[in-house]
Image 1: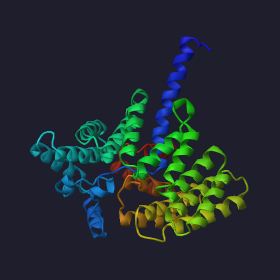
Image 2: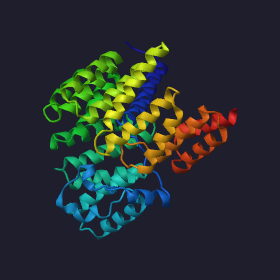
Image 3: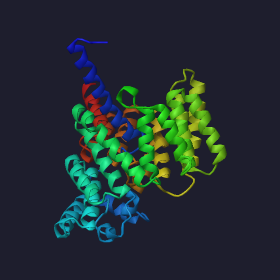
Length: 384
């Protein structure tokens, strides 16, 4: 069918905008979307008190021996200092050496977390060029491309989609054990509309392949995809079945809790909604039953979010957020300190404590100036 040129461009622009939204949605749903923010001296002191608060390069999945020296330069609570140290190390590195490639990869990670998308892209590209056989290098580059897609607007998203997918696929082929990369690809195939490259059938094939490497993660993705493609209730059923098979898996408990919460939002009857929220909270508590790792802190944040979004037990929600900030967890799949203060502001607003809400939103923006939710919240208060 032929369309008038104006209609054609409207369709193209609409598709591009939807792609930008999809990239942003992935980062938050995967909870790859937690921004790294500047922290106070007090926050740094709190972080230093936490056992294992330092994040090693291994957390990014990058393991070549040439990274030993670079590893000491990378501290997530001092990202600006890490950026400077890595820049100095790059000046001293021999051109074309594997050490240079490793340093570029690390610098891509650091600059991306500092929200310097252009620098992250250039360092990621150079790292992948110098370490062509490293699946991890290609994965870091793919994440830099994704950040460019998220922040660069509609045209950047359209331009970079295929390069992003190509780097992601390269990272998986080079390292089939990279569950994170495989999950990112599955998410794109399963959740992005077909007109933008989504392919639910291929996503299901990829999930089946992932099951041979990490069955619990595959089951979690399967339940989430079913909840998206069919209905939340069907997703909850798949999640419950997965937990029966792996009752001690904290990640599955977290996924089931998220699916139950999503189902609760579809309920009109208060009693049904309340019962599902209680079930979801119970799953989040189970997800916190292991080590104080990323899953623990995501579940901790989800318990607070559940109460805020459904407007119940707000004092407990405030306490849960305080516990989260006390641990000061760092990571791409964890809520930032700025986002936590925005949530604290939501609680004050719901309780009618306007000045406390305004102060919390302002603190969120001080930590994370581009946090759209906090900006909108402050504008809403000013309009009252």
